Amino acid sequence: MVLDDWKRLYSNTKSNFREVAIKGFWDMYDPEGFSLWFCDYKYNDENMVSFVTLNKVGGFLQRMDLARKYAFGKMLICGSEGPFKVKGLWLFRGPEIPKFIMEEVYDMELYEWTKVDISDEAQKERVSQMIEDAEPFEGEALLDAKCFK
View 1 (cartoon, rainbow, N blue to C red):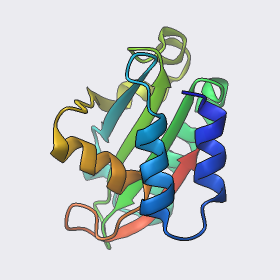
View 2: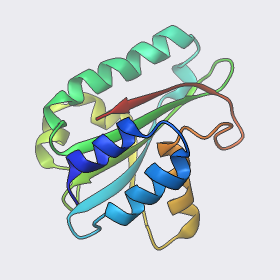
View 3: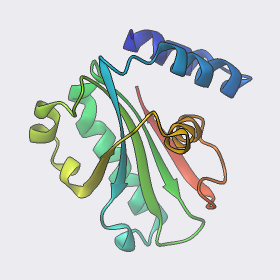
View 4: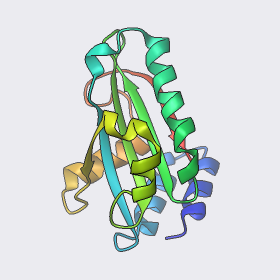
């Protein structure tokens, strides 16, 4: 999998997103060279104010900049009123989350990380929905969706 090819496809797909970008992602995805991870913010009960929650996620993405060559991420802020839920999907080069990211980005410990089992169709569909900003997501409106590419 060439990560930049995926990022380019994601960025340049303007219509038929599921048919083009999502299908392209699964065609490109290399489970030997990359891993997919869900993350859930551990302290969602604190996310009562929308702009504060958005700023937390924005700051996390800024601190992830050192991983730009090794990762692609989607962060979803769910809910129409507080407490807002922060959920993410990350694609990392390698079978695990790179150690330097875990050590350098202190926000990583604020999330519960779960490796995606791509043999599970429900998890695979959740990945697709997160990439395409499907709304409602898991029964909730999206306040915002941010992409790290």
